[in-house]
Image (cartoon, rainbow, N blue to C red):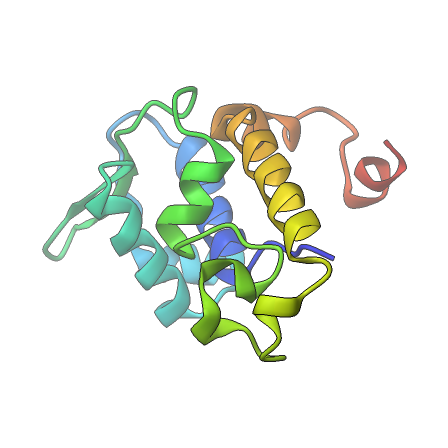
Amino acid sequence: MFKVSRQVEYALLALQHMKRLEPGQVVPVRELCRVQNVPFDVISRALQRLAKHEIVHATRGASGGYHIVGDLTQISLYDLVTIVDGAVEVVPCLSGPGRCKCGTLDDCDIASPMVHLNARLVAFFKTISLLELLETAQQPGHTLLTAQAQ
């Protein structure tokens, strides 16, 4: 089963929090950690990567923090995953023989189906904008239980 990494989850939590702020209003990383109950190091690394790709902007100093500068309608879930995690992979073998743990990549009967599945997953992730994803969570009555039922 494909799972979204903790780093991607934390990046989404940070973006969701910042999205609720006034445009240009910065939020310190420590505040994000406190409000979202997430570890400093993980969310800090994710935000640094997002800043490097100009999705958020970092303001340094005593009153510094992060705020969204990218257009969340133009940034896909695929973009976020690749920025934060480096790749969308259903199995590690897809990034090369050195990552194949079973050592049978050349004779693997499911390599081709996994490549196909991964391509379909990538295509799907590219259709979901971050704004669409984050706005889903803001719908009245939307909880984890109602999301799972859909």
